[in-house]
Length: 229
Ligand code: C5P
Image 1 (cartoon, rainbow, N blue to C red):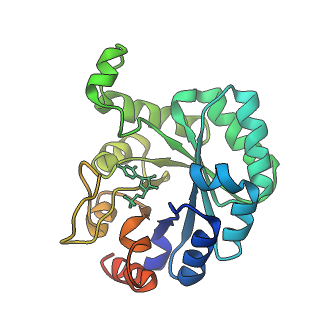
Image 2: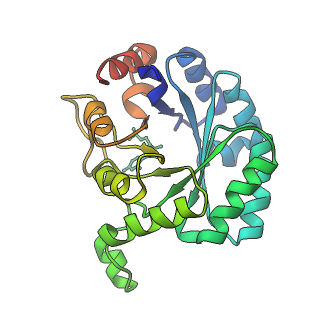
């Protein structure tokens, strides 16, 4: 896999026009374009089709519902030929399995990625609902999701070694919170450089603002790719 294929750019912008313009400038410079909830809520399948014209789409809509609903939704997403789809591992093994089967039933070759514990859940939040801390839950949910057939997981850079250790070499690990060496962290509690994330076991790096807010997004993507081993 070449370095740029390890990059996914998060198209967290307000309009589909802006997202398409960015995707056009980044065609061939990254492995995936991430379409999130905002763009999907505003433009739905049209956003996936429009962005998909420029490269593989990672649809980050973190499904979490009863297995029937998730399975039926994943089938619709599969028909859109997305490359990656997120679900919450905390929905349980039947839900994760329904997503995997639904995505395949819809056609295409997309893969399900399971999210373990959102990094925005604080240890206090977890304690308030009598839930175990993230260090306990993250590897447990990672194992649950992979046992239910999810080929990949999303986790914070700091959890990469823990998750890799929990699920082994086969799992496809995706991490956000990536910042070029020597830059700021924006709102990430603990960002990682591209080289550090890959050394810790990441297969795909999700990068938003360092690319999307750069004067030359393609040059920013190339610079990040150049930091990879
Ligand atoms: O920070 P950046 O613009 O690179 O964000 C890219 C992606 O990382 C976002 O689309 C979001 O899914 C994720 N993110 C996160 N935690 C944060 C900020 C962003 O997981 N604190």
